[in-house]
Length: 337
Ligand code: ATP
Ligand code: FE2
Image (cartoon, rainbow, N blue to C red; front, side):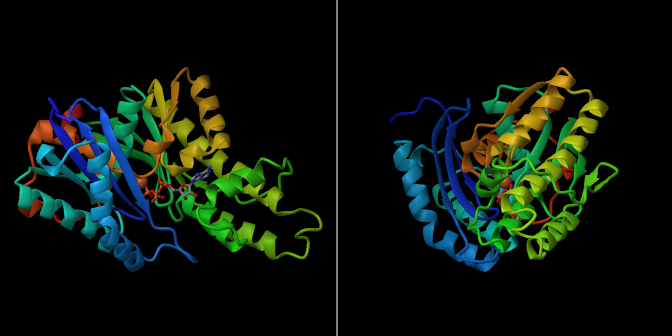
């Protein structure tokens, strides 16, 4: 294919996904290929993930180029997830990006992964200035744009929501990812068992909820007075009501007229229903990011890199080191000022 527009290749490598997205500077997507590490048991071990990404990155890149029907010579910009995430895993994406950039003399741009989740939502849902609920295995953030930044209005103080659900699923012997399986079980029950509901100011705490759910599974009443589907239902209802409360308060405070739901947990129909309800109550338009762009992917990294590049040009090579702890509210967003 001959391109008459500038083309960007984006590399996602913050956690379990090594993703490559190829898009043009107008936001047309040519490929979106992900290789996802799935642990055989337990959680994500950064060094195991790193090995998988190291062993697969070239295959994913070649597949993405093939699908986009282009070669590295057609690429005008390389972008990569520079923050936040697991240090050893972030470094693989950064290394691959720096190599491709230096060998082929292509400008390079580092991107904050959380900002990318919002930007791809704005692009795909044709939405301008949303309040965003970003819920995934590694993050739980309520954010909106104010004073040149994506400010964080609420966040988890301990476990991210996806991690809570996955950990509970693992405890009861369900394979990773637990989210869809817990949703399916929850759908089969309406029996609510009270669980700790912990909202502190605008922040959330899920660790007590996990402990209480585990206690229910270990109790002598388990499979007598209630069963797994009742716990799944109660866990979802409690955790999602907490998320909904904080999102609604942020919506009332910021007075935004759009609400965006993103991250892997955005796939959950019950959560969508609750956030849609409060959006309607506040006359706000509600959008869920299309699921192939809601979870981690290279396209969101490509698109956010393009926005940044158009304003500021490429990163200096000395500014391509990874920042595992960088928060989305620490960086200014020049393309929205
Ligand atoms: P991040 O790096 O942004 O924290 P991540 O590495 O967790 O993201 P994602 O693909 O965004 O990756 O999200 C994966 C999470 O989404 C997992 O915790 C998974 O269980 C959860 N999930 C997927 N589908 C559902 C669902 N239907 N209901 C609830 N959770 C879901
Ligand atoms: Fe993510």
